[in-house]
Image 1 (cartoon, helix red, strand yellow):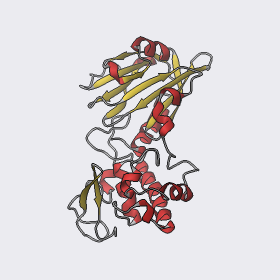
Image 2 (cartoon, one colour):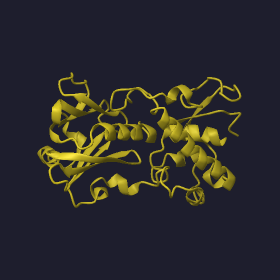
Image 3 (cartoon, one colour):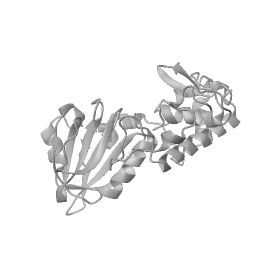
Image 4 (cartoon, one colour):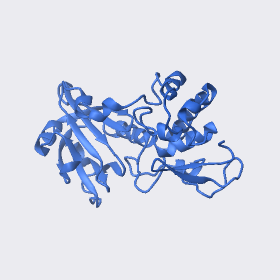
Amino acid sequence: MPELPEVETVRQGLNQLTLNKKIMGGDVLLERTIAHPISIADFLTGIQGSAVAHWHRYGKYLLAELTQNSTEAAAGWLGVHLRMTGQLLWLNQDEDLQKHTRVRLFFAHGLELRFVDQRTFGQMWWVPPGIPSESVMTGLARLGLDPFAPQFSVEYLAQKFKKCHRAIKTALLDQALVAGLGNIYADEALFLSKLQPTTLCTELSLSQIEMLHHAIIQVLKTSLAAGGTTFSTFLNVQGVNGKYSGIAWVYNRTGQPCRICQTPIQRIRLAGRSSHFCPNCQQ
């Protein structure tokens, strides 16, 4: 699943390519991709004629602020969640459709934003103007702080961990605690913090929480600079792979030597998810 660096990479690409461009119409090839409104016709009518003023990111959600192209009046929001396998691709309309194309948004000058999603878990929303986006995209209201938010502090994490009796790896995957963090970067941050994924949150000292806070931000910035991690389905909006997987510390490196001490990287199952770690460096 695309995580914060991948979604942020997509957001930055969309802001470079789609701003102030008018949406001329669209085509929905898989109806269940549209989460709101229920009527596909209402979705297409709602976005038609509007322009993208800016793309925002909240955790793993993307939201395009829409305006009326002629008056710049608010025209609502276009929301997207890529889920496990979603891709947003900026293409010419005459390019062949990918096998798993679900939604096409047509822009002026023969361009389109194409939503491709193999597993079909991804969703799109149109939120009418004057309605809070979180009242329609209800997952937004459950999000914790984004790691890049000013309020995401050592004190914030310490407060959240204070009465949390879960393993630290499991807690970090909780979007109500850290929005946007997922399996890849939780593993990487724990390695940089020298923490075992099974360590209970309540066992962490303040100095360990400080290390973890720093590591979360560090690894996310490093991955963002590399364009995210390439896995089977992630591409940026121009179809380019991310490069973080080539420099990952532990993620998806089971059996390979630790980049610090050469001990083979181990993988365990924790709350149904794979966790990668170095048994020597993370004690």
